[in-house]
Image 1 (cartoon, rainbow, N blue to C red):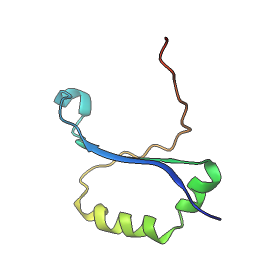
Image 2: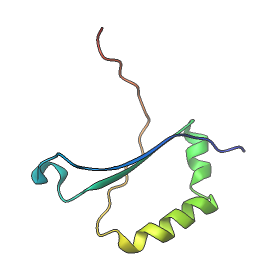
Image 3: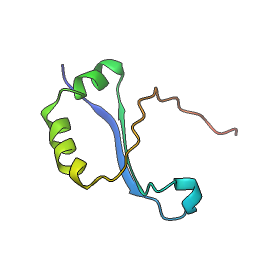
Image 4: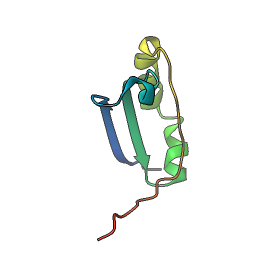
Length: 75
């Protein structure tokens, strides 16, 4: 299977109040082209490499796996 990460982004919170971010300061967001590609990613060497690099420096983490639904703003 050819794996496509539809969207990848990262960022650092620069404006939220401490009580809103609850100690979290950074985000990594990945969007896949369907559940099959998400499942395939779980066993990819790149996924294990990423985890190996970042896990030692992560103090606390929240992982959310959810379907992406685009919401269009009213015109």
